[in-house]
Amino acid sequence: MSIERYLDHIESIDSLIKDKEDLIKVYDAELENCTSHLTDMPRQESSCKDKLNSITCDKIKVKDEIELKKNELERIRLKIDSSINAMDNIFYQNIITKLYYHKLSTKEMCKIFDYKEAQMNRHIDKAKRSLNVILNDRK
Image (cartoon, rainbow, N blue to C red; front, top):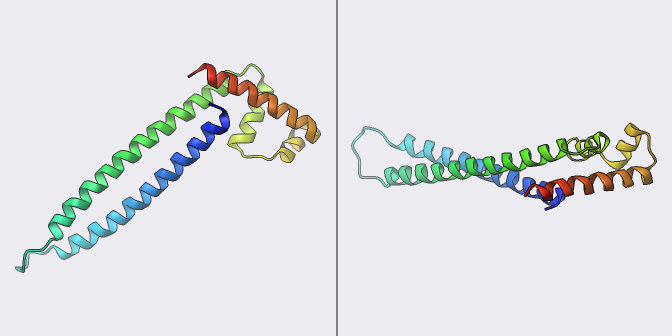
C-alpha cells in the first residue's frame, strides 16, 4: 500500500471516530433525558428504563468500536513512523515529514530547502518512492 493510501485510511478512520464520538454525545443527551424522568414518585410503568438500558448498551458498543479504531489508527501511524525512520536519506525523511505531518505545500518546501519547484517535485517523488518501498517491505 502506498503512503497516500495509508494516509487516506487514517483520514477515514479519524472521520469514523469523530462520527462515533458525536453519537456518544447523542446517547449521553438521551440518557440524561431518561434519567431525569426516573423518580421515586409513583406513576405508571414507563418504557424509560428499557430505553435507558438500550441506550446504555448501544453506548458501550460504540465506545468499544471507537477503541478498536483508535488501536488500528495507532498501528498504522507506528508503521508509517517506523518506515520514515528506516529511510536511509535524512533529507527524504524531512521531506516526507514536512509534506504529510506538517502539511506543507511544495512551494513552502521550496522556500525551506531553497530549491526550484521542479527540483523539489523530483525530490518529493523520490522520497515517496523510497518510503513506499519500505512500507511495502514491512507488510
